[in-house]
Image 1: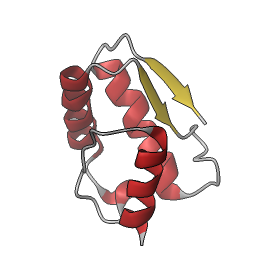
Image 2 (image 1 turned 30 degrees about the vertical axis):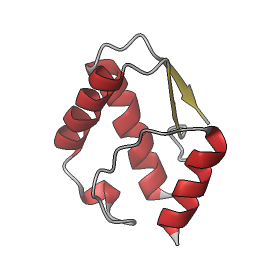
Image 3 (image 1 turned 180 degrees about the horizontal axis):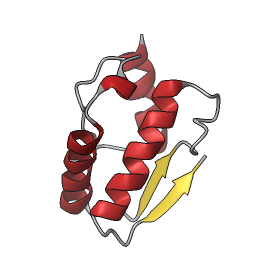
Length: 89
């Protein structure tokens, strides 16, 4: 179900390139933060996006996975020294 939603969302935005982290829904907070951030930073460097969109620190709904994704994206943006705009929803 989540994968179909994800594909539909990306298609609606016209996104044709995407990367999966292989982390199971509901387990993000248990993943090793520094390793995930380093992986995302490598993707940011390779893709060189102009904008990175993520949740705000509160995860929008307070969901722990969303809060964790926000922290990963924010830290990876800083590590990658990216010129991309970081937008938090």
